[in-house]
Image (cartoon, rainbow, N blue to C red; front, side, top):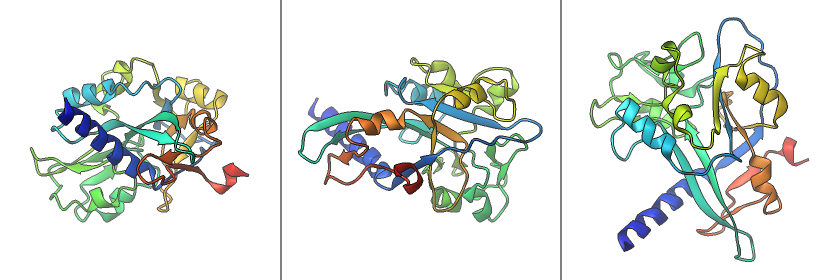
Length: 245
């Protein structure tokens, strides 16, 4: 039992370290383009942090233990007085950016982007150098111990091609994830983005991520728009200047 608790604390601490350098900014509103462009919206007010998305993804994509294509990072947050403010959860995955930093650093061209926006890895070309793993500002890639190749979320494109939802979307007990065509104004994701305030995880690499989060303001409002990490009172989530004003 004690080992389980220690593992839980370690998981929360590791998740918090990700948030310690995370800034969220307003999501773009212009989604003009031709063809199909997949994106995902995540409603944080409906996410219960159950990790069903993580487990279903691991089973669907044969993800090795200890690695993930998607995961819900969870941490305990306190206010400056030391009182607990909120348990916050943030699902993480590849953001399938418009300007993927992982592609530019790949020496063999193994990392590439399909016309529908999904970022993929050609395992036949991947040499396992991990440059893309280091380049991803969202920590969404890893080296597989099975193949010694880079691996990541693909939006379950094999399921999309078959007319199915990604495993994480289908298994979400709260219905927090929506995937669809950003170029189609009648798609579920476009309708959601049109009626909900959303944000994206910012990056100094200007990657233009295509995973959108709703509910950030509700979480931040619980503690005067600021959360402090339990370990050392580090700032966990911050609004960008354009949002704070």
